[in-house]
Amino acid sequence: MMTSHPSQPAAAPLRSVARIAALALVLALAGCASLLGGGGGDRERSTIYAPDPRPAPDPAWPRADWQLTLSPPTAARMTDSFRIAVRPTPGELQVYRGATWAKTPTDMLHDSVLRMFEDSDRIAAVARQGAGITADYKLVIDLRRFEADYNGNLLPTALIEANIKLIHNIDQTVAGARTFLVAEPASGTDVAQVVDAFDAALGTISGQVVGWTLTTGNAHEATTHPDARAR
Image (tube, rainbow, N blue to C red):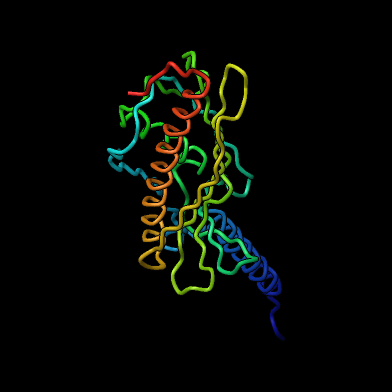
């Protein structure tokens, strides 16, 4: 006669429960890893880029006896993003993965133009809007493009386009308006090389804006105050 062992039939269900618990633990850990970007070496790292152009002032820039404020620049939301925009084809706009700007494009342009005015020593006073100075003019900037554009080429070009208006504060008339477009070819397709091109383009367009503003403001002063003489 065979002796029965009541405990044996329960062993299989217990092993199944153990396997299910282990599987649930693995899935839970996998879920946590995915929230952390894959965990360990698989986590995507984001590099933050901060262009800081410091071109020398142009000796040909005129001196101005009037004061100027810079309004905060405006731009479309897609243009004024911390993500670095790239246009691989004319109708397609993407962003570089794992790379961001330290400041928005409008802030970069604003800071670059203001610093160039200050470092030029060519104007009586310049400041951000709201800084408390009584300015004769204000500079209004609308940033239209700030992107890397392939335009059918093997290497991208850093494009910065902005419309600039110089407003006479006394009567709110437009003393002058102009659209600036700077295209600086990148030396390669790596993000760092594209950022170098943006650094150069930012310095170029800032210098163009400063030189144009000084000349345009002086020309307007000559018509509204014939006795004024720019040094």
